[in-house]
View (tube, each protein chain N blue to C red):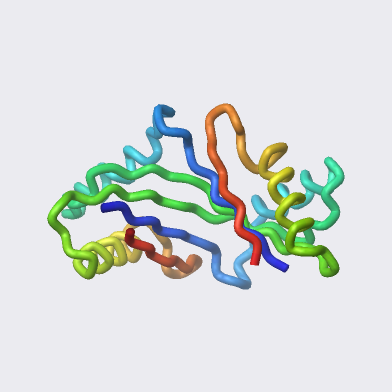
Length: 80
Length: 80
């Protein structure tokens, strides 16, 4: 089973890395990109034998404890 | 309009960062995570007035030219 965790900065948290990307896009001619925010993506391969519910629960815990910083970041978990 | 670009390492490309995360998960007791691969996520806010097709085309170009390294990375684009 595979899970994906998407980690994004909370709104209100400055994102200089995203800003730099947006500026670079502008420099090479893409003026339509008004704002860019950069996040992280984790693809987690899970051991066999977990139920979908159990997998979602465990991966959510992993995100809370390690993959995301809950003070500054939001995350969403997808299990497939 | 907003677009999301998901950038992941191609299979076969080593991911020491993901490996370190997987090891840390193991250390705090999550043995169900067999493998972790880390990718990037860009949220791009686009200027008003672009059609959906035009937006998808432009963001795909941005990904090819700047957001992803096509030699080592795959990407998918979602426009909403």
